[in-house]
Image 1 (cartoon, helix red, strand yellow):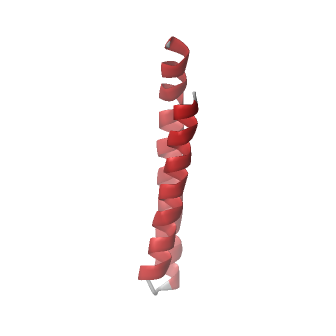
Image 2 (tube, helix red, strand yellow; image 1 turned 45 degrees about the horizontal axis):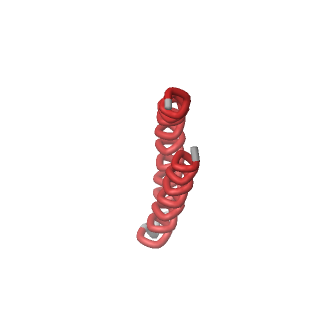
Length: 61
């Protein structure tokens, strides 16, 4: 189960890194807000899709 938590922590750190990269590179504020919103929504969709798979894999082991 610790591997699942490690993977989720890695995913969250990757998302935070993407947000910081967007903040640094893009100057336009509205464009920046839209891209950050898209990153957060996409990451939530990915995490919600991965969690049941990880839970099933953990329960079957």
